[in-house]
Image (cartoon, rainbow, N blue to C red; front, side, top):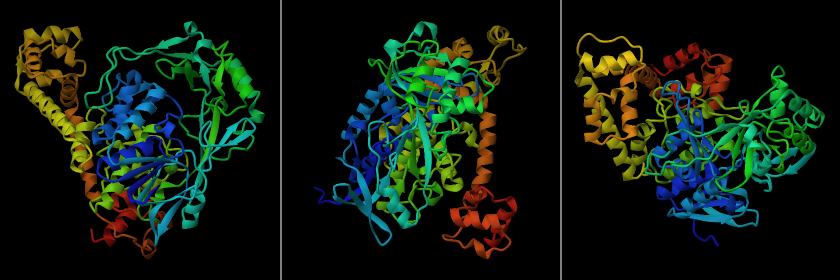
Length: 622
């Protein structure tokens, strides 16, 4: 069946696996995607949504590089919101509700229409290796499939164990069996592994809910979209709703705590800090007698509803009894109860920045196997692993994004340098240069890079260059054009801003925090410029950000350039830190384990102090 040798074999068809397969295949590698169920490629295992704070920026970055997640999200969206619009543009984060079934369908169709991408449905039971290099995979039926590189994206399936109250079921997701064999083999190679936990809420019948007593949560009046290509923005949206738990609900949940796997010791692994279960929330925040619940439709036509905020592993009877006491859920009918799942992961300090493992050549890890949580984090790792697997086989330089270039760069550097002992989730606060890493400029930052490696197509580059030129020329127009007091003062008075007494450059007036592009468009000269030059919303928004935040952007870019000098100071491979007795014991231990590539990366390792960096710089003759 598999007489030929593949360039890249991707194991797992979730968000990481789908992006990895698409990237490798689109760059020219003969690619095989092996998954236990071809019907669940791109499955939204938890909530039916993409994006959010920092996660939305990641989806934009994936799209800018030539990945598929943004396009798939736009094609299957049922609602769109730009979060944090009341804050500065560094915090603006796009988020979409999606039709779960259409999202998976669009992923399947996109991959089927990708040249060089083959499919096979079966469990991968182990890896084929030769002299420390992976050379293929072995399936549960005993088939040996040869491949020059392998990307493991096993999600929650590695020895997955589902918990519902005191019941335990082997599985990687509700209704699907766990994957076995790979963990044990990797441990035999010398890898370290651990266990993590995640959870999901009940799914309920929307026909049994009373939306009249809930608070509607509509999408934006003028919805945007994720992809920089010409995907269609929504013109009709579906509302979500909000309700709340109560003291009664919490009391009913507490009745089942003695049967909770979280509290009776059955679950020993660590769950996501920023997405706790409902029992964890009422235990940790005992002073609060109410928590928000978001009622999210699963699609355009289905009646299935996702109860966001009610993730739980309590017994199903406790879940049901408590949820029926939530406002609007008095007559609720369950599609399925919530559950927790434990699974194997491999601490990501065992990887290089390319996501290739240090122990086995041409073997890459991406997604939850690296200890992350979230579709977006997984997809970005899959994309980078697929890119780098192809580049290595083509004997080209690796593709590594720096911390000042992308949230993806922050994510991977955090994982490789610091590791994680709990499910890692991206936040804007993790990025030192978030003013540079905005969702609006991901194409300007990354599309040239994606095009240079052969992933982003010419169409993307042309659109990006046109946007960059038009927005830059618009900013120049504001710099050069003056406005008369009689034209601008009525606008300034309307926003309680000090009037001007003489003609002044538009740039200076526009820089005021309470003057918006909408106000500037009231000026005839600006309105005429926009019309004559055919500027769209993106180009106008980009120009406004450049005008208002140019000082902050320049300062942050200067700081990034200073630190970039340390990124250029390389540390020899397999450097023996035990020889440097001037280093602290902790630094020798941590640096020896992580084996940082540059001084800048060494400085980010937990437990390494500035004095340790000074010692390294002296030793390296710097």
